[in-house]
Length: 414
Image (cartoon, rainbow, N blue to C red; front, side):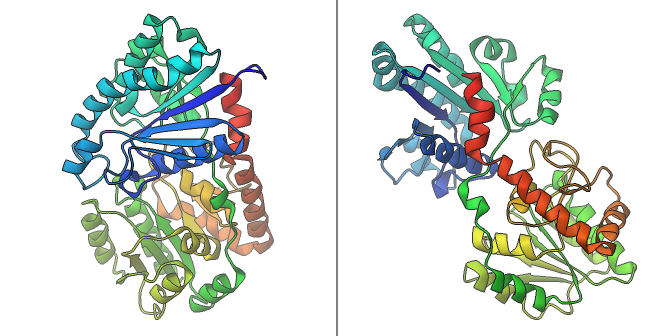
């Protein structure tokens, strides 16, 4: 970018900040990226499948929200991915011409430049459409088109040759870059980041109170979808191994709505573990502390309510370890969020480029509960080392603040 050029950023994504559009880590990525761009003074537009009952266009200082496919969303109020194929077709056909007519042509014709960052397979055909319209208008050289892969979902739907010709393909980790070589794609790595809320430190009093309530227990936490890739069965086997070894582990778990939950509960029963289900209401620390009252006779507490940021920060900081490991993890945002609040992250060894075993995290390479038992055992025997790993994790997380990721990795690419 030249200093005197006016640059617009346009983010294309199904997910976004509305509750209707929040389904996972992409919404977290988008809201963090938006925050980082606007804090840096960049005019930013988000084109997403938002709440059908909110305004189609909304301006918030440097941010403009464009809620797309609302007519379809009204017919499918379940969430952003309900009838996703129809939404994808509508998004692809109708959004690029509108974006060109209302935003890009006036801005580019006045001498400005634009950066378009599109997310996931749902937007790939929209990028192809937009590239064609820009070329027909003779404006393609004034726009940087980036298409980002957060996961491997939908890869079989993408025309990779055409997409690579239309846009620069990026992804979130070296692991994902390696996975994409199988499709003949050479992607650039621009990692995920953390927004300011991720660095809000939990209050000392609820942390002390939670630790008091589980005094004498080894407190573990895991928040993830009930998905085989998230290695929930390994978490259950780890609790069982610790218990057989004479320990008193307590796993605080929060999953989703996936069917794999049944297999997880069955494995826990086979291992002789006692499960308690709790609703962590009200929200915040009060709800978390209430949910973890009187747990002396249980091994696994399953939280049935949303764990809001305040409660999550307290839980991650209080836990002896946060089991953020997966068999397939494109980036590992939960591990980085754990580090940001001073927790001890236990990650896998796939997309977690930020994790260095024994330096700022525990890194598991095997689907074997005894691996965690051994690694954590050495931490337990050397408390000063455990504190140093937590401090190092906090330092690592700060390097992944969105403002720093944008300055270090995104802006040089445009």
